[in-house]
Amino acid sequence: MKTINIGGVPEHFNLAWYLTLKNGEYKSNGINLRWKDYYGGTGDMCQALRNKDVDLAVILTEGIIKDIVEGNPSSIIQTFVETPLLWGIHVASHSRFHQVDELKGTKAAISRYGSGSHLMAYINAENNQWDIQNDLQFEVIDNLNGAIEGLTNETADYFMWEKFTTKPIVDQGVFRRIGQCPTPWPCFVIAVRNEFLEENKSDVQTILNIINNTTSEFKDIPSIDRMIANRYEQKIEDVREWLALTEWSQSVIDKKTVENVQRKLKALNIIEDTLEYDKIVTNI
Image (cartoon, rainbow, N blue to C red):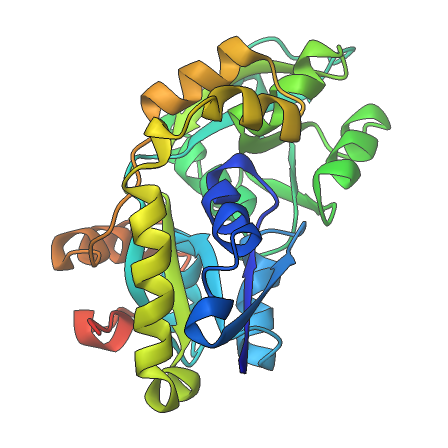
């Protein structure tokens, strides 16, 4: 049986992977798929792909495109979640800030440079017509627990993270959400190391077939809302809202979207160069 390593964030978006693993669907096809949670998010997973710690990753679109442009020898093979990610803009409950425009020039907590929390701070700054060079500062906090500590201790002023993941922290009165910022593109893709794909294309296709079969029927799974609420400690009404907003994909990301992401990243001086579509995406 072939062992294949895959990484992703431990969030509700990835429950389909847990279900297919629990059901033994990969093992019945001769694949020992081993899932690893990456609490540090996209920047952490980009490094894991580079280090060969994982073979595949379920990863933020803008983050992996940036890293491929900067030399990560990996490719996007499919869109995983078609809809945008809704990034909540959070401050500590005791913060003096109450509106997003008050955050101009303050310090954003980010999991690491190149992460979604880092890149989306630029998108938020542009949306609010801030000076990208002078109105953004960053404090690296590693993960969500680091953000709780950083905002509470005032080593950082605000933190951007997926709004439904952080909703329990808002409900507990640790964070206040003062705004939100959707990604201007599909939020999650599946990426694979090029070297691994060349030697294991049929196994990768098998993995995609299994996960796609589950995501295409995900919302029809009996009591899926209760399962998510219990597993991720969320309120049932929040889960139902999230399910209503979220659509999974079983298709390859299109050329127009990849060009749009690169154009936006370059305009924000996050990347210096762009790549052709077939240097970023592989249709297997």
